[in-house]
Amino acid sequence: MSTPYHRLEAVANLSSSLPSADGLATIDSDEPPRIRRQTVNRPTIDDVASRAGVARTTVSRVLNDQPNVRAVVREKVMRAVDELGYRVNQQARNLAGRKTVRIVLVHASDFDSEPNSYFASALELGATRMAAQRGAQLITHVVNQNDPGAAADIVERVCDDLGDGVILTPPFADDLALLAALRDRGVAVICVAGGPEAERLVMTVGIDEHRAGHDIARHLLSLGHRSFGYIKGIKGHLSAEGRYEGFLKALEEAGMGEGQVRATRGNFTFRSGLDCAQELLSRGGAVTALVCANDDMAAGALLAAHKAGLAIPQDIAITGFDDTPVSEIVWPPLTTIHQPLRRMGARAVELLVARAADSAEAQTGRELVQHDLVVRESTTV
Image (tube, rainbow, N blue to C red; front, side):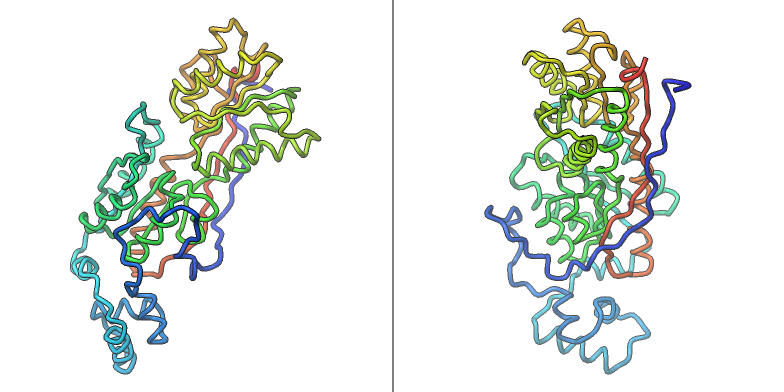
């Protein structure tokens, strides 16, 4: 390898579409629904469309008194509205006369520990710049992910802000009840790094998490590592879980299994990376490579290795994820996955502005952006 900062191109996929979200609004679960303010039998615009035998966009045009709708179709829609007792969303009516598109960006944070600040700030920077370019207004909210009423709080804030659309980050991006509630209220949703189930309901923007984890494993395997530690993220963060699944898939392809991995779970903070790494290293037995679900935890793992008197990468290799600024200023600099967060935030705004401009029907699926494996001195001399 010619330089420790060699950047390896990993994947560049185009948008893909998944089946429609029809029929997925009701989520079977053993747990009670998280959104308790939603009226269960309240008719939706999709119900009106089905009763009238027209498309959802046609109903929207009729309710907003737009032209190019035949009188007979308009009459069918209004008859369905009366029969179902559908209440026109006054928020949407207000938006019809307002030119500036309002987008609400929701950040998740654990108020009891330090936040993963770069993830939020990079997304917000990209979203803010694109909003300025497109003449849109960006409103941000930080919501405690551990609050049982968080989902209902998000719905209330979005409606209070008269948001044309909302950008959700994990773990809210994987809250299917929340996604369905926002959709039923006519709010366009883009999820950043949402999981496979989310993309059946809304459009998600993110990298191929499975492939990224696979790339890290192949890099470490190519260096001769066969005994691994792995610090996962918080439970329920499906994109981070996808990284771990991709990592295991690469091991399987190399004739190994999960038995070669000592896994534990952190919460994406520096402190959890330090604590988890110290616990893994104290178990005894050789761990020659330690993979962390983000750079903050990897920085904590570096400190744990230094405290244990280990040489990096000679005694133990350590990797992160995200390619945050900290990954270049710690010693040694971290091998990591570059996740283009600013581009993801910008693209989410682009999609929402485009939808507001043409009143297009909500799309589902995943739009992939390229990630890169960035190799530095934490894995190679």
